[in-house]
View 1: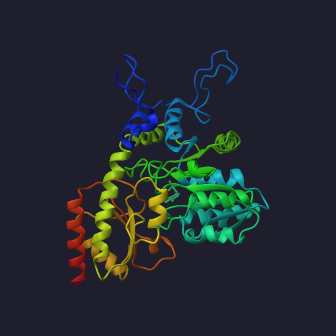
View 2: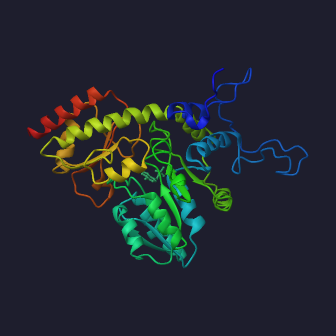
View 3: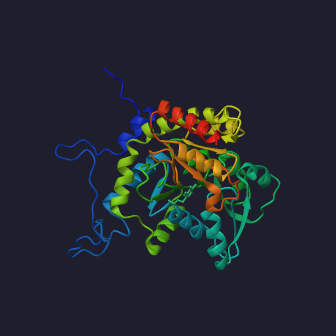
Length: 383
Ligand SMILES: Cc1ncc(COP(=O)(O)O)c(C=O)c1O
């Protein structure tokens, strides 16, 4: 008799494929298509009384299928949003009130800081910022008394610093704050913040989770029912719900997340070595590279590598020459997609030097990327 495997012992590839599969039943598709509907037939039932869907902004079959997969992968209860910023807004507005303080990363995704400066402040919420690498030590020193929500982004985007989620969660809870972790860069296969003590996971699923650079999507996951109902009421009443097609495409893409991350991580390992071997390239960062200042925490805390690296070239002109000489690298923002992209962050206003680039390693063959990057660097250096 063969022993049945527990779903907990399945590998990542099996878990994501199971997450996009319907239970085996004759005549049922292996993965349902999207349900396009705004209202649903009500008949003579009172809205909501029969348990049937009523109106798609509140709930619908496509959302439920995606969210139950995310429940399983994040280890909590998930709600999908129309973008990562819609998810982040739900967390900020859901858990911070006028007169309360929010702590966010000074080196994380810039739109979070803009939202705090341009909007949260108008509603009387105060924001403090702290570099990701310092958050644990600064909280330990009691530098942010009264912060009721602490957001960390680890690995941070774009500099790829990492903080210890379990240690920060303990410090946050000691001062009565909630800890939210932006898990965009790691994805749920790369890091499980809820099991490390965080209260909230927030992510842009526009990046590696959906992974094809063709849609915007986000989600929030929590452990606690009270937190879930606050986020749900924010989503219901602001209408920041994703449409069924985007939700379905994201869900469908989950099935290949393990394969995509494996190739992206392999490409990041190889390209970070190519960059580190060039005298004209400085500060190559990839948390999984031995010797990187985030390596010790990343390799202990994360479950697998991700495909984003950063490095500093001599100037904006050096980046332009590199891109011109390359056949495979393309200039584009965002990250986590199939294509290898180079994003010069100073042009988006990040406080980094002009030649700083975030490179999102895609799913092309490693040997091709290594050859292309090496020869493009050599060609651009000859100028
Ligand atoms: C770490 C991080 N969080 C949140 C966001 C916002 O996500 P979206 O663009 O899906 O609104 C981004 C976008 O780049 C990001 O990189």
